[in-house]
Image (tube, rainbow, N blue to C red; front, top):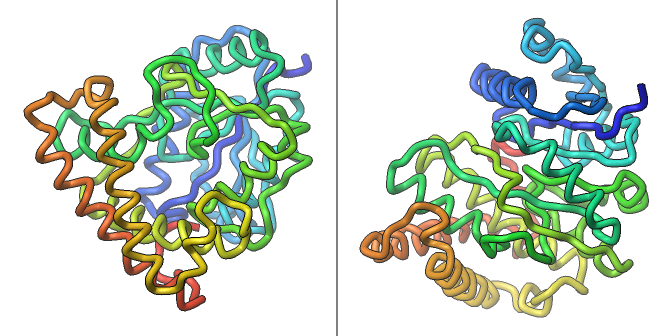
Length: 310
């Protein structure tokens, strides 16, 4: 039967490592436990280089899984390849280190049917344990588009979202894009009249190993903040990226203040008590400061070579 939805899984972090494959196993286990009762297809997209290393037991976890091999290795291009290979008009995309809640897929299809005017829907991301660090960093990093309810947004959480296939095909990931530069993909969709939603019931649990994970994320994120705005001068605050080194303290200060505001308004939804907020503010500021080396490389026009993201 023609699938109602195509689910595309890609891996963008620690790809090809034992830890990365274990994360992927958890992701596929989550998909195998979905409560969706209609026809669906599941695609794992991997590069030509790493495809021969895919563990053979993955189909035991999710028997319907189909492997799609792509010549590119960048995560955005793997998503492109998955959307091209998909059979359904609705496409849900999930990173291979995220475990979806059982109702994730049903909720996505329900929302897209209920809102035919909507182009794409993003979901909520939390981290795996109840440690203060995990709750604090999920709040500071993931709550920027979370209003606690189904609501319009200008962002997509590229680790956990769904889109209408025709729209993504019309706006493939740009050749000069990279990790943490999703605005290069989403802003052209918005300029063409696209509409995005956020829904907290589209919930996934993201693998999180503490400060080592945060360091890797933030350096790549800092690079993308400036690099994306140098590529596309129409992005919000692109004028700041043209200020050279002077742009770095401006971006860091703006990101700290914005993060603190998000923490204030979203603390309860991420399990953070009011008396924990001072510690959260400190951790959020420290995380934003870790972005500085990546920003420096972007200002210098150099690539971000030492990263586990692709």
